[in-house]
Image (cartoon, rainbow, N blue to C red; front, top):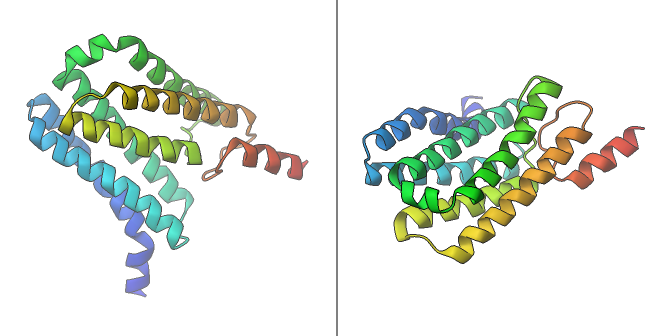
Length: 194
């Protein structure tokens, strides 16, 4: 029984770790400690991949786990952008329109979901998962190896498409659900329910 409890909760433990790491990430940004920041951020990005893989592989996906993962994701990406703004302000200034665009497209579905469902979305769309990996690779390589323009613009385009799909899903859903996969699945489920 205890072993089953631990295995079932490994994805939640990993998400919980990412949440607990957020104050340390914030301190490393405030202290301008680039090395500690990239180590903590890299561990958060890796555990983000692991919690999802474990949950999907062992059929451990739960509503609570999806919400916990979403909180950890939001916190990690806020810290990643904070690190970029504080530790590399010239890069952010030089790419202000791109950052404004993806932040705006990220925020809109969050706000719409809060108004419509009184909670942030935890849809876990395939596009968001793939984009999370793409963004994670960009953040990791940027802090470790520097800026590479083609990948940066690829990341921006992928982010915009994923956030637009999330917005369409939030607008189309009658009640918030987790792990809905794609906008196609949302539309198909709604038609089948009618």
